[in-house]
Length: 447
Image (cartoon, rainbow, N blue to C red):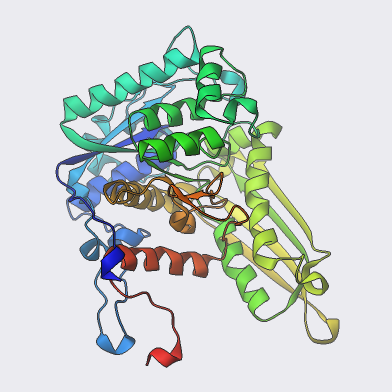
């Protein structure tokens, strides 16, 4: 394994973590990191900070923490920056989001107040339930890209950062699919100049980051970097990209339960999922066009895990419905409720009911941290293009486009992996491979 491991540059200097969208998720993450730095909280939920990784045989008893095994940037190395369409600093944004209790908000107040957003790029037709009061102005979308690039360079210079990553924490945009303008780099750049309506806010951010060789992660379900032009630019520029849609609440449960049912060859007749949430995300998703982006993302997991085209007797007639309801009294405390109608031996019916009362931003915050650290690692390891090994973190994992896996020709017929446990194996085996360790296969013959 050691002969083909990548050469990984050391994480020397500060890492800029740039966040398009300074709302509940971003501010909760920043506050948590600030408290963890001072030993006032533990980064619970973060694989890079809390998890261990087994190395070698079980009998070897080698299981270092991931943070000690991989050459990651430390929490002290992180410098947070953001863009938003509202001028509030991170403290005011966190206070408005109302996720954090007062003791945590005030303990992190100094660090939060230091994060003042840069003006955001905002074309309102892509997020109809929001209005921006702190936005950039430019004659074209191409000019918007250049303004964002200037922001990145200025932030890194002023904060003395050696490297940067960007993680989209903004709202879900209206559903769209790739069009001609997304086909290649030239078409996209011509579309920027022409203000092509198929180019959304998040795509402008993604393009600016790629042009600056800044790894970009899409934490929302809409089209942002998962199109041929972005993949081509990322591969050409040797920049990693990843997405999409953070896997937090209900879909996390689906990617745990569905593999268990399939493993035991239990049939599924129906799966009804509904959510209520009252934060800004809930308000945005109350718009049918934004909801469509989320619905497509949330529905895809079952199709790929259960494989009804192969197991038609068990899953060929499944009825799968997803609903999201905006309910302001609930705030960030989301509730995801699932009713699952299953059947077993001789076709006898059974049911599962899951009621997950969770906190959306509390689950998403450690994902943002992990992705920032791991995408920086990927950049330093020379990875480029779509980072499918990070699918563990996403509802709708991006796959390489055009037969390229990190710039290397690959089969175009691949499908995304949604099974959480296979995703975790892929994640940790990639870590082992990067560091020259043997992969863990769990073959009994190894012992």
